[in-house]
Length: 267
Ligand code: SF4
Ligand code: SF4
Ligand code: F3S
Image (cartoon, rainbow, N blue to C red; front, side, top):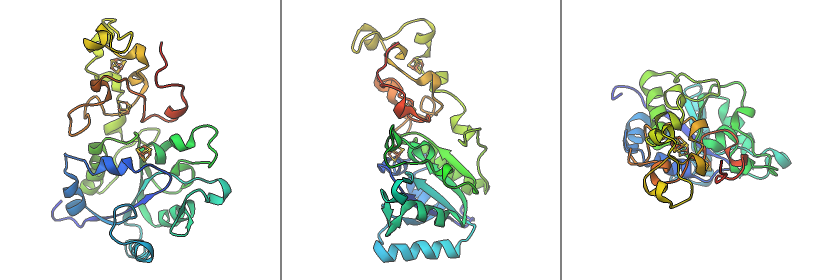
């Protein structure tokens, strides 16, 4: 990697909450400083860059021209299409216009999180702004979906590391997610699985089963239908994940998770 030219990255933000960025900057393996200083050249990121206003837009334009066909476009959030995109204005124009314009010359696009991949809570019924996942707007570029709300930090930097190391995109599944991180369900590797298999379930919050660390399936855990790496990679540098903290998985990496009833639906 030391001998390779750093890959230019343009990171754009549509309708989102910025927690995908918050997750990214906490990557421990690799450390995010190594990603940003040695692997990629983060030329434009309107949330964290020093430049603002016309200066920032000039950098965006310069990067687009200089690295035509060579930069990665990382997108956090999505464009709202209603009212000609007026619900998200970025640099004086609808975000959807800016997104299409920057996507034109990108080598590939990374859709960070549930927002860019599926729509997320801003697309919840009745979706008044018509928040729309980016693959419905950009049809002619490879798009790597890295879902989760947010995605795991090391999954994000793992995807970036793969691209910068091998110079190609990781293998994707039918839904456009990297197979190396999204080919297993949370349930497949959950440490509470022996309790599931033994029929030992939490029946009420804070009951004896909860104190014993029993399976959270009856409390609405969506681990059996959720594809993500939480039960293997875990969060906070491998320390824990929602189920280990005592709460069922809400399926935050799955399409439509926000509209699938209450997170506390019991069996
Ligand atoms: Fe925030 Fe979730 Fe959207 Fe990421 S996917 S920007 S964490 S709402
Ligand atoms: Fe499966 Fe959830 Fe039970 Fe873990 S807590 S074994 S993911 S149902
Ligand atoms: Fe999300 Fe479930 Fe992991 S809620 S963070 S996919 S355990």
